Length: 242
Image (cartoon, rainbow, N blue to C red; front, top):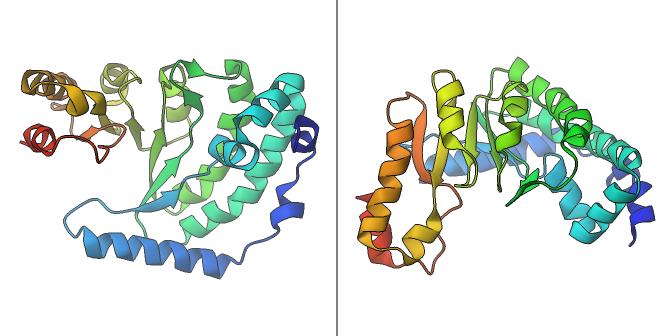
């Protein structure tokens, strides 16, 4: 209900232990469903509330930002407790059938980091390494996704041994391509706003921008980096696809 409550929050007390067999079944069912629907695609299952996104879901923005601003170290301890709890899901993912895991975590917003970068490097990325370890040990491929502009953290995320990046148009795909294009996949980062309100010339230019960056690399997936909303003109979506 308030920042002090957030700083004392313990997910083990509130949410308790999950049954691993149930989690594995849920992941396997989701992966199988994806395979049945999309038989010719790279299919996966994954997790949306890895670390920061889980804290946003629990507290909401106002309480999260107040708690982190009042007591950065105390909020870091909350983050550590949450990471220890969400590890249950990563251990289940490691034992699931999927060869590819989508790890989603909105660590930034449109203008970049909303907490001090040093805080992320003390509390977010060390927890990523712990959480990702069972996935790596089980030979899963890790595809990392964050909304917003995470350009300043690209190297930190790569250091956590992910295999690919998904990004919105705000993140610098050229940097990823230049530094990691031969070793990692990367997915994006066409701007859905161009499809929504642009001309055919605008759409062509946006596709060309992305293709000029990514097409020469083996792991590039051309994609709209923040999805295509249902109010997009159908002709624009079809022209983009063409």
